[in-house]
Length: 153
Image 1 (cartoon, rainbow, N blue to C red):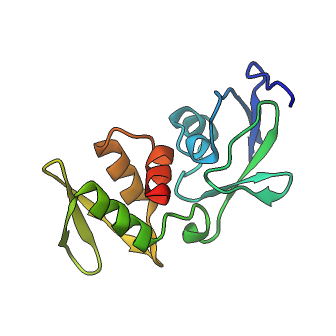
Image 2: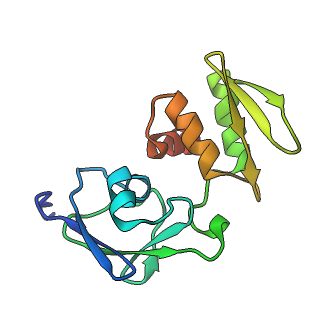
């Protein structure tokens, strides 16, 4: 097994810009997509991007490797860019954690987490990215960690 050199940056290309981005062990696609520094430098929307490695779309939990080249593409369809966890997995996670749920406007819900109400929306049966970020922030987790918790609950 080869030793990974984390002193080598990942080359992230968006349009004509290439940004050298240094990562740590365990850094995944979702960490890159939501990284504030990367978003500020390259100017993409984390809600409307997909990440490619050698022309293949990466899953948001795939780990990045130092020295590799990645391409960020703006997705035509936002829902196709970064899939969220399925509704049944989110609901299982909510019940397991003991969070209450109340109906909100239309098909939206509010989760009550530690006394705070968080708006939760599902798009095509998946938790939308904005809801994911709000829940993660309230639980003091990275979006990636929340996704892992939901998928493994």
